[in-house]
Structure formats: structure tokens, C-alpha cells
Length: 275
Image 1 (cartoon, one colour):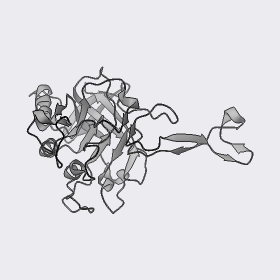
Image 2 (tube, rainbow, N blue to C red; image 1 turned 45 degrees about the vertical axis):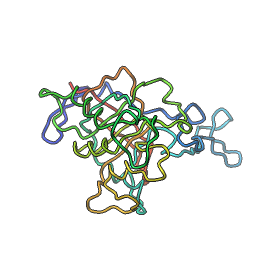
Image 3 (tube, rainbow, N blue to C red; image 1 turned 135 degrees about the vertical axis):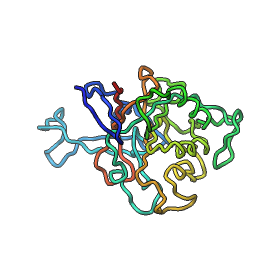
Image 4 (cartoon, rainbow, N blue to C red; image 1 turned 90 degrees about the horizontal axis):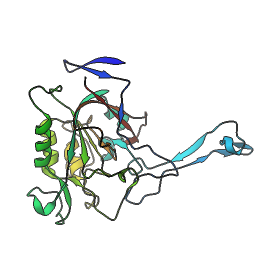
């Protein structure tokens, strides 16, 4: 099914019958990613007296209670409410339906091998995603004949892209994260949506600063309120997984979330190749 979509005065054609799902399916009580060692996502049948929500236990249908921490238990999308005293929901932050996007594969660099910095002192082996590597990767796929004039979503696949990512526990070993200059570059390029296969765009343990989150949403260090200069409609999606068979390049992104009035929600980012 071919659809013609116009965004910002530019027309695209995509095949709606060929979606590329880059979310991690959340298996309640099964293998799942986990950040910070929090309680795993679980489910159990609801029960009230003789009524039980499990057909295997004699119930007429299945209905269960689900417990999860969206920020730590799988693919999720968050908005500026992640930082603020005001409860700003991701439902109100995410307004874009189809989003011109670029997918880049990046090999992080040890901090000792780059001059780029972060808000706290880096360990020599800290794996950094740098401005330089992002700019170089974007230049490789962008040319005068590019289908997208102004991509507004950036999708980052880190290398190596091993099959263990969808069930990895992120606690003892510091996963890759972005340098300050990398986030500044995204702002210069006017990316509004950032999607990564990492538990956080910040260092896993960063003294609670969340400096990259604050820079991406334009919220001051140590502040917990948005201003007229904050980017209310920018989003960050973490813990995605982009299979190797999806090549770097340009896509339309459909970023799907449930209508939760929360700062973050489980999400399903779907890519469509541009015809």
C-alpha cells in the first residue's frame, strides 16, 4: 500500500505494508533489557474470588496486571517532563506523526582518544559518541540528491550491534553516551527527536546531572522548570534496537506511544523506507 505524504512542503512516498519496527518487544516475565538494576517488568492474572483472568486456570478470558518502569524496562519515549516539577506528559510533547529521519551507525570512541568532553570528568575508557563521528556519518549519507531536505529525527545505532542488546542489563559496565559537543551539534542541525539503542543519552552514573538531557531540551543546569526557550516538543527515545539488515540512510519515522499522561511511556518507533 503506497502512501503519499507531504511534510513541510516536501512530498514522500512510502510503502505502509513494509514497516521496519525498531522497538524491543517487552516480554513480561521473560528476557528484557534493564537499566540500573531496577525491578523487572512483570505481569500476573487479575483475580477476585472465583474470577481469574487466565484461561489456563479456568478463566473465561485473559486480563492481567502489568508492572513496569518505562525508563528502565524497554523501548520508551520521554519528554521534558522527565526533568521538571511540572508534570508535563509525553502525550502533550509528541506532536509529530510522520517524521523525516536519518539513521546513523556510530562506533563510540574511548574518551582518552578524543578532545570532546562531558559535564563531569571522564574515565579514560568511557565510550563516547562524538560530534565528529556523527557529523562524518551524516556527511556519508547526505548528498545533493538526498530525499530529505531537513531531517528532524536522528536515530543512532551503536557498534558493535550485537544480538544481546534486547536483553542486556546496564549496571556494572558503563554503556556509550554522548559528548556535550554531540548534543550541541544536534541542536545546530535542528533535530527534534533523538532515538538511541542505549539506556540513556547521558553517562549511566553522572552525579544526577543529566546534562545531555538538559541541553537537548534547553533546561538549565540544576533547574526544574521550563521556560519559553525550552524545547517542549522535543523527544528522546531510548533502548531501541535496529537490526543490521536495516541500512543507514533516510526514512520516515512513525513514533507510536500510548496516551499516557506521564513523562515517559513505552513506545514503538517504526521506520518506512522512502520510495
